[in-house]
Image (cartoon, rainbow, N blue to C red):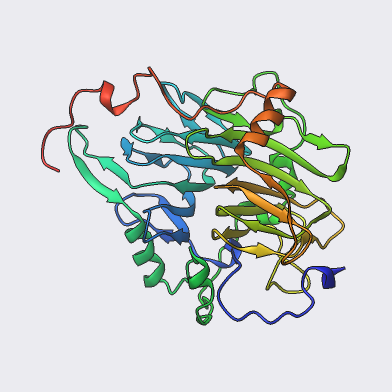
Length: 356
């Protein structure tokens, strides 16, 4: 079964993913009760990806998202008191915060772990709300990873070909979902009060889109950007994805099952493993290598091109336009990409002023 995707396990570089369960929690020095598992930090765009943990009783103070951010709650519950994001975000909630949004008061009573992709820096405001106290940037994430001897996932094909550095050898701290069945995050019963919010969604409330000609594939479409072409999904992938190129990058977090992956071990990668596929990456096949459902999150940052093998004609190109047609045909309400007209926009508030 594994031979179809990985006939010769002989990785030469540091491509692939990172098992987040083997990483430590790295405290953020300027934020009490908050720690991260650093995953990727782009030196080109300033985007960074991490697992974020808030200890019980912790609060994320007032901040401005200088770039957009998407997140998925993996365990625990986040509460937000007011504005367009007001509500309770439980396990399996996926949300999107657009650039320039000013957010205050995210808190948790039971402790939270969540996957977050920040498209730019986070600016934490002073107590008076009129000055910037600190920033969290991709450079900060890189420096924190270096301090703990954590190798970040590469951002380009060229970086993937570099020699593999020694693996992190310190104490590991598994995710809370490592001891349970993370399928419950995206499947199961949805209560009457759980629904699609304009800016976040209980992923259990989003229907699986199934395809008669591809019975082993199902999708939950969460957000589509017509500006950037980014598509955010939950994927149930129990078959084989044929030969393809990632014309745009993509990132994935395995929630359930095991995935067979280029340059990976024959037993595949399991829950808690996070991947970043740089633009131009090729897979001759990707598939499930266990009996349980293979389910993962996915941000697809550009089209995927399918063929029948290296050097063969293009069979299909899948982009945001096809996903949009699927969502519209199924009547699926998508998470919004902007706060147009909402008072939480930075531009709608009084100028920050004060020292920066």
